Image (cartoon, rainbow, N blue to C red):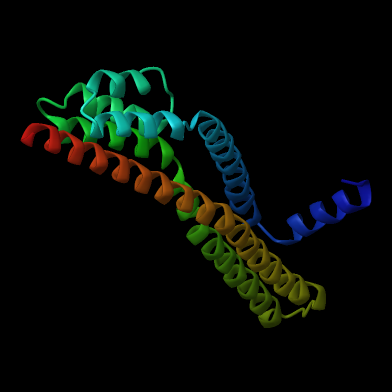
Length: 208
């Protein structure tokens, strides 16, 4: 960032009034959370192993439980880990084991999603609060004995800057929030599909 642009940004920040400080904190939290989540999903994408999952399910459908367990024994794919838990408890509490394993995977995948959701709602409200305080300052200046045009325009400017900052943070945060939520839904669907397929194979084996 060039020095004139940095100076302009600092000036706008100071003109936005006290509400800009909590908005700055909200923006920093959003950046940190989005960065951490993107890195986590990037690493998770590298661990996905659809071949191992498919091999385990194919072996399970054929009744070859040893091959099914071996296919996912060393895989770090979240779906494979859930299948591994289900296969280990196929003779007993299969559903409970799968639910616990799935909950652990989804809890890690959904980490900090509520933080982003809160920031999307909170940032515009903070901007609205800045709008109110800025307009109140303008009216206070108008009602004083010494009318200062700079104070009136400064209050209006504070209101507009705070509103723009709050909306900007919410808009920029909403995009990664929707992306992360979509990835979470996709993972949940994969876990449910694999677990259901394995459960059908286990029930088929019991009937046979």
